[in-house]
Image (cartoon, rainbow, N blue to C red; front, side, top):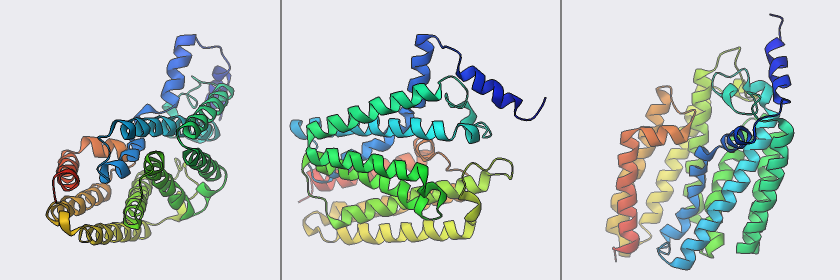
Length: 307
């Protein structure tokens, strides 16, 4: 078989008309609904403020969540169109609908445009400031796709900024004040997770399957240092915040332990060779799930019970 023949077949297959039902299923898969769990970060600010149980706040949070699902899916579609040739060389990414020829690039881009317009429109209807944040999110992800993904360090910071914008969206949609501690902890945890993902990708890559331009420029030592630094700053910031809440110190003070242990456990798993898919790792490791539940119980205890 001549080189590139398989790719030619895939490209040709992408132009074949798909059955409507099959096309809709392929589009839904390309929107990556599993990744929507990241958008649950919109809960962070309202939950921390003890306002999530108010009906109007809950409705605004749901709206912000839908906005981010629309915008992030638009981004995934554009990225997958851009990366389709590289994805075909990856053991798992080659199964993505666009790379596999199940969804044409033209259909994906049309769908991305519709999702982006719907997302920004809904965000503006909820709160004009949320509409501005939505536009900022699209600008950030577009910059990442075109440029930042090829710049060492900036690629990590850009993805981490996307997580921070998700968390900010919850505060903006509900008009809840976001403290500097909240932003620092969120940013450091985001950098921690993205650096961990890069470390896992670097560990699992081979010379024939490099799918990120910047990956070969990173070293395990540099990424380990980034992981440790982000975890340390996040832990110090979270602890400092807890001790600024004397009326809730018992609950928040106790929540420091599962927070720090969660970061340590995650770092250990990444060093063991997993972590390319953070959402899968978090949902499938029992220790992480238990620590998450304990932390959430103590944190919410401080919000709703502690005085």
